[in-house]
Image 1 (cartoon, one colour):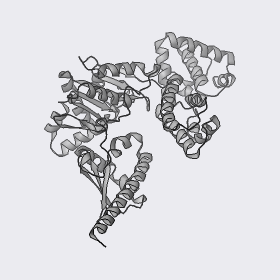
Image 2 (spheres, one colour; image 1 turned 90 degrees about the vertical axis):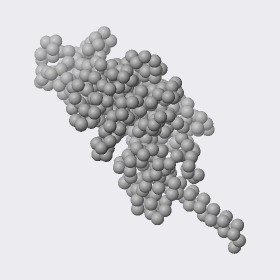
Image 3 (cartoon, helix red, strand yellow; image 1 turned 30 degrees about the vertical axis):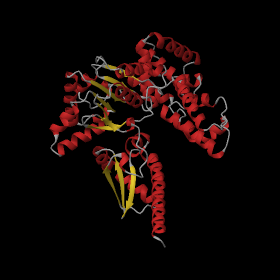
Length: 469
């Protein structure tokens, strides 16, 4: 065989091995996505690039030392397990920090926004930003319009007015989307600003690492020299005394320098258990904004926006009217579940070549629809309302008609009507055998009060959130 032929065979073998390795990594990534969830996948797995499998070692290219350390500590075992499950001959994994363009077989370099936040002066150990999470594709509705407006204002830069901006709300309501959108916008407006976005867990990890390596001076200089600090899921540091101490001093140092701070959490500062009072006080000194649970109009808006994008990807699919309205009514948990359901629906219809009808939707999404069914009971509502208003459960279902008892009783009746499938007579029976007209009167009274009495409105929102959790 000639030298040229040997070279061609070797090149073909190399290309074949590379293609096989990439296919394996593609299957492993899908398995990891299902295993660790979308957020962890986007932040820590998507930026990895499998460059070679040699002598039982799978080598991955990563963009930063921080990411290499974090993935090695938190996801190496899972990656190895999925590689083995895909029949890859591997016994361990390694992570090498290399520039994305340095590897000739690596995928094209991701957009700047998808890489960890960096500046021209020094690399900041931030989490990667998701290029999809911008203001342009954030669907605004009544439940999130204030949070959106506040985020927009902060992203515009200029004099610091809301410090900190504190965004809170349940899972899948848009907190992280707005955080990423702010970071994207700030970097576009002023690329020289040092913007650091990371989760509270990552802050703690960096702090512990600095303590272990005796690099606290470097840690303090790094975190106190940024122009914008963004910390996601701050409730994670609750109960961790040393981390809270350092976070408090970092917070104060940045405020003293008039640097912008943006925080998110799953609840209001005052409701975060085991968070130090001085930190709660600091977090409450800025603008605290709640992202309310989605309403029907917002859910429908999100579905319509996503459906338009999917129609471009699947132009031949027939999509019947009424499907989006059905999903917006039935899936009320959060936007992530809603988006995932729609993605599955289009993918399924494309794979099997079927028209997207209401019947097919119910068949394809049977498990999601079942999980989204309301399972709240009247008895659970009564217990929650009694605890909230500090009254005895026996008084709520008893004959007392004093205002301190009657108003919570009406709130419980209203929530029972809204959150369960029980009829008015059935609800009445569970409230001490009351007539259905009494329940009807209570429901109407709360309907009237929630638009004129802000305290009642807040109580209803909090109770609803607790019951749906």
